[in-house]
Length: 159
Image (cartoon, rainbow, N blue to C red; front, side, top):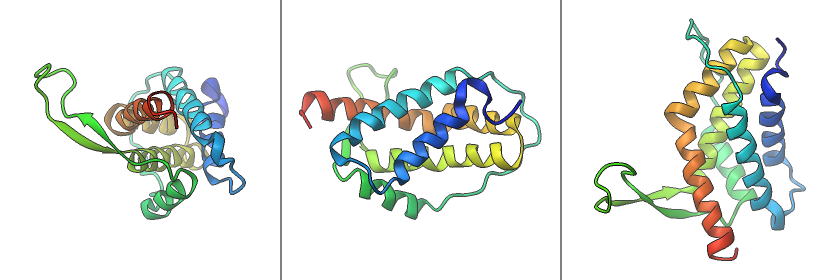
């Protein structure tokens, strides 16, 4: 299957990264478009099959500092937010920790860039494994907490 398979996962990821790299981005509409892309990325994850782990290549590592600078330039309104330390344990008695929306988005971009690299340099199975493993063990939590923060910004604070 080509890199365009699986519910346009590849196109969704490319579209998201293109949006983030667009210097002509409309700052007034950034949060709406960001929310849309986060929904599409989540849907793309859920539309892909689970793949068997094999011997996979390491993805090309992205420059975290450069991507973080890009995120800050395009989303200057993003900042720190409250986050419960535990969602399911100690109901009503958990500590509050600090989330960082810029870090969340930077980590999502770095991991998705690695998935795209796999589509373009290894094979589809490798890309899907990195997508699913990354979502389940790293960037999926960033995506979900970022979405809650963005919801609060848009609808609770009126930003």
